[in-house]
Length: 246
Image (cartoon, rainbow, N blue to C red; front, side):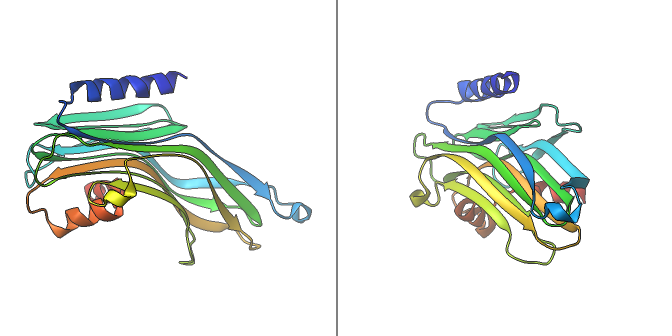
């Protein structure tokens, strides 16, 4: 409850400062958890999962004008505690948060600028043999369309992805709202379940990426990469974070 109240107050501050004509984007994943199911109790191996590489952050990036150098802020959650990141540059405002059972991102933009925001959990994990992992959570997203501004576009995305180490088909949930793709709608509210199975007799090393992200840009002639992000939901903020780690 405390985490929910904190996230709610964060949104109130952010959107309370947004002007009426500004466009807003919000995405969140809450009440998330996972459970392990033993697919072969007779083998004597207890279901287990380990995270040798585990990264959990809230991060934002903003600039007052598209093409300007962006200001970046990243707050790590080392033990699953609640952390948040917020920045303002001109009419662009961004906020992100992360805790042990909730993550989210939100932003608003007016006549100029760019922002990215993400709550992100990415990890390499080791899953025990003959084990099913079931991930559940509550995903929400919304877009608020302000006064028309040439070149203004926003997106909100929630993604849950478990990628097999053998380059097989990932287990995936993804919802994308984008003003660049009006057919995506302006809101979603989903209770989700994603399953990932290790049916082999060996430990499985795999990768997960779970994120709630928001993105917006104002540019009369945006670069193709910006259109791609808005059109397909690749706001992954993971890319932004990986570039900063390099």
